[in-house]
Length: 179
Image 1: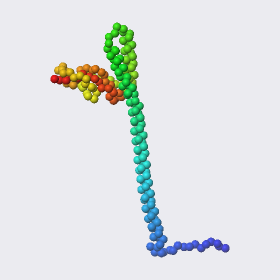
Image 2: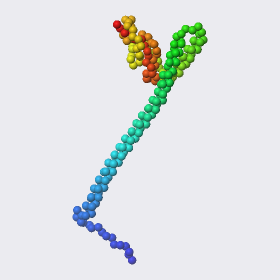
Image 3: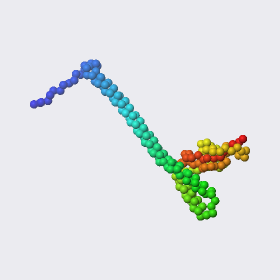
Image 4: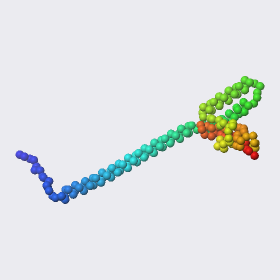
């Protein structure tokens, strides 16, 4: 007792434009079109992902750089407030005193303070023998003279400073002017 169902054989030759061939071809064309659309979407999504990653990395780097700059120059205001005290010490060192121990103590305090500020990034602006530079110097007095080159710095009223490469305070100077 054979309970097997008889197999149906597909039509062998319905011609080249048989109904199954045209259906299969249209389905194959639809699948190829869909595959191309998916491939294009995938490429677009991958490009968007790469761009988003690059934007995120750039934002992270920018944020880190800004944070470092903030910390690097956070002490700038404090150092600017301490500069008048440093100036007072320099003036005190120029005064003659009979008590050498007192003068030596003031000099040691000044040197320690100057060294500490230098470690923090304070750099004095050199003016001796320099030409006047409006980016670094403030001309407080102009002296007509033939003894010096035009725009040469003749003297310093107040020392100028850079802090970590940025101008903190310009030097106040006396500048030679040729008549």
